[in-house]
Length: 259
Image (cartoon, rainbow, N blue to C red; front, side, top):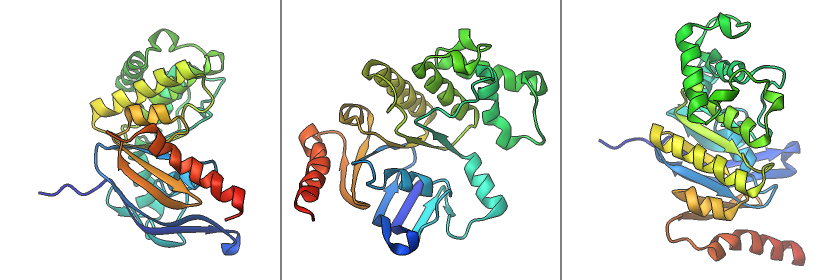
């Protein structure tokens, strides 16, 4: 039996400012379940807008976007909330609550499947606290479980954010420039952790990156965007750095001649 893709986009166009700004222009792609897909392209090429389509934060102006079998154009209310429980999002700036401990931040990943508010770790079931600690151990932060998040280094905060996403028990993980604010060595460590864990869990990942070496080293597939258009879609295996870099170079050349 054919397994349906985790993501299916067909002719997705997104306009802002009454059509004066086109962020995505006819993007069509499938993302297979368990695939690690990396988006590349200059800032403003549409990568973040595409990611935000995949959890329903943005709706297409034209075309269709289906995620985990849900047509986002027609999804609303309860159905959209159910979908978002299955879609984890890792941000560039971590989005942790700095005054809370690591374990409290990680436990918040379970809120989508719980009823009512929670106040402190003791308000979560023992099994959930154990699960949160297991995730922190997995990202090598077990010793920092009770440490305030704002006392961690950037790399540690991003690892805590990964643990929080795992606590959500997602089927699809979106990551928007997750290592843009980190140094090269820490970036490699975080990406290795993110992709290793997602591969072990069989999770689908769609991630935007500027670091081509990381994209080529970890992705199954690379999609390049330029001015909202899809200009590259290749298996990462065998793709050269020069071929990937052309996504940026051609865009720069077009800007130079005013195309």
